[in-house]
Image (cartoon, rainbow, N blue to C red):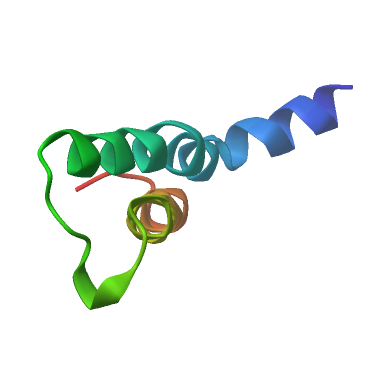
Length: 64
């Protein structure tokens, strides 16, 4: 059980990026009536940005 929790906490920034930042960014784009670049839908753009940012935070150990 401890190994499972340690593995989950290790990828927590990635999960946060995909589960919170992506929908937040998509809703912000829709609310402000902005279009996502390259013809992407807002949720795809949010998942791309949130996933990349979360992966960066997971690998580097920091958000910035």
